[in-house]
Amino acid sequence: MPNYLISFPASAMNVPAADLAAVGEAARQVIREAKAAGVYAFAGGINAAVAPLMVAADGTGSQATYPQTREFDGGFCVLRLPSRDAALQWAARIAKACRCAQELREFGDDPES
Image (cartoon, rainbow, N blue to C red):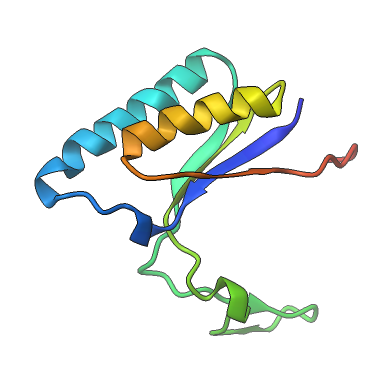
């Protein structure tokens, strides 16, 4: 079964501070439902307080990032679903809970992963 990434950048979530607790609970409820349905792989948010580290092949690290991912932040979940249509339905549920549009991407299949 394919894995789908459902995500949004932090800037997309334009919610009044007074509503953040309700939005968080609504999002956690969708995740609980995904777990109960057996489609949950993992979820979380990018910790913006920790700078990214670019790690070279020799193991050295530097405080850098790829230019195209410099603004990579926000929340995400990975769900294992039978079809893109099912992924669209879950993404819509998450969008409603988070009150912002979600980006949907399918992971490529690697038989050894």
